[in-house]
Every structure is written in structure tokens, then in C-alpha cells.
Length: 266
Ligand SMILES: C[S@@+](CC[C@H](N)C(=O)[O-])C[C@H]1O[C@@H](n2cnc3c(N)ncnc32)[C@H](O)[C@@H]1O
Image 1: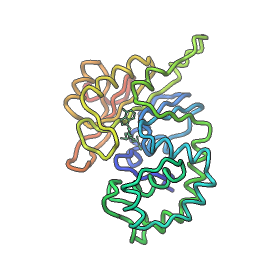
Image 2: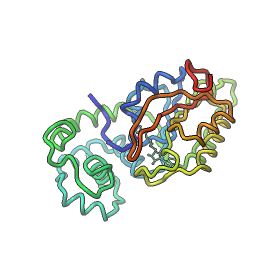
Image 3: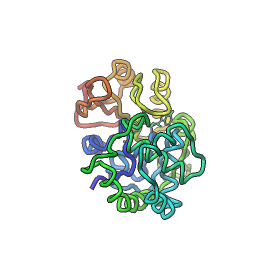
Image 4: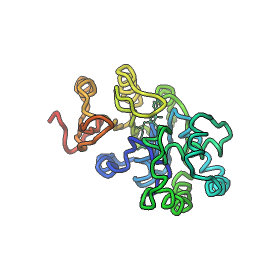
């Protein structure tokens, strides 16, 4: 069963097996741009996990799953999944954690591309429709809870987050056991995230990842700017596959600072 409770444009669930097979062995996992958790929920759980996203809707949802699961479940089943509620929540921000989580789930999962502007799946009785989602929600919530149990969530810009990762100096060499996965919004695309990426963000991300001294993998499209940065920095580039975004079809790549089987620059 697809376990993710959040359906979000750009999540890596469908590509997860093609990406995860290139991950190195690791004990500690760091996901800098968690989103819907398309990679995290599809990989074996590591001993220690630090999960970050700048979007407080994302971090609030998963913190509510961790800390108020039963209340969330009850409120979810009481919520009328209806276009009137979509319209109401589209123009109203919520601060109270449970309401904020429900609003985010409703707008992300049941409106076109998560924009809140038009309603999809409301009438579908098949897979992905409201009825199907309601039927599976409890089970998905329980699995999500157990997978997130013991994980740390943060809500920072990636620069602050990565620069504040600290490792003890007691000779355990935790950097070598840590793997960082970075899946930012695609460069210069208008995906429907609250924050988008420009070239300077990509440069900063490469710098922060390299400064961490950990093994890392960075997901992107084969954008010429990104490929040039990877080449200048002597990183490996693996082709993952073709992917259709809102406007065009492009090649999804994974950039790594560790040896991989196939590289575009071989
Ligand atoms: C492509 S999505 C990640 C998708 C995720 N890997 C998945 O499979 O569900 C990018 C995420 O980065 C977050 N983000 C955007 N700018 C950020 C920043 N400056 N620092 C941290 N997170 C950011 C967005 O909120 C979004 O959730």
C-alpha cells in the first residue's frame, strides 16, 4: 500500500526505488527538504533521522501525527470533505495545529495540484478519490506514526539547517555514518511550493552540502546550470529517468559526492 498521507506535486514516491538504490550505506539519515516524505517513507528507517522543511504546513502536519495522532484521526473523520470547505480554507489560514493540519491535507490532497483553486477527486469513487482516501486514512496514519516515531523534525531554511548540523568530537566519526538527501524545488520552476529556488540557492545548497563533510545526494532536473556546477565541483551525476513536470518532460538526475556505478561524466 502507498503509505503517504500527503499527496503533493513533485513528491518522489514514484521514483523512490530508482533513487534509493544509489544511496550509500548509512546509520544517520538527514532529509533537508522533506515535503511529503516520498523518499523517507519508501526507504528502510535509519537509526537516527533528522527531517527538515521550511514550510510550516509540512512540519506541523507531521508533528501533529507524532504528538496528537488520535485527535487528528477523530477530526479527520468528522471533517466534511466538500468543495465549500475547500473554498473556506483556501482563503483562511489556520494557526491551531489540528485545524492547520486538516486544512493542509484537504487543500493538498483534494484540489488540483494542491493549489486550492479547483477541486479534484471529490467525485471519484475509485483509487485516489475521497472515499478511498477516507477508507485508508487510519491505516496510513498508523504507519506514518510508527515510521516517524523517534525522528526529529525541524522547520528551517536549508542554509541554517545544514550549517547547524553538528557532530561530536569524541572520535566516533559520525560524519562518515551520516547521509544527507536534498530534494529542493526544481531550479527556476514555479512548482506549487511556498518557496522556490533561484541559481544562488542552488550554489548555496552545493556549498552547504560540501561543507557538511558527509556523503550527500542532490535531486534535480538536468538543468545546464546544475550540470555545470556539478562538473566544476567534481561531483557524480546519475541519470534517474524521464519525468514530466507541469510544462515539459525532462531528465531527473541525482548528484552525489560519492562513487556511484554510472556517471554522466564517465
Ligand atoms: C521537491 S519538494 C520535496 C519533495 C520530497 N522529497 C518528497 O518526495 O515528498 C521540496 C520541498 O522543499 C521545501 N523548501 C523550499 N525551499 C526551502 C528552503 N529554502 N529550505 C528548506 N526547505 C525548503 C518545500 O517546502 C518543499 O516541501
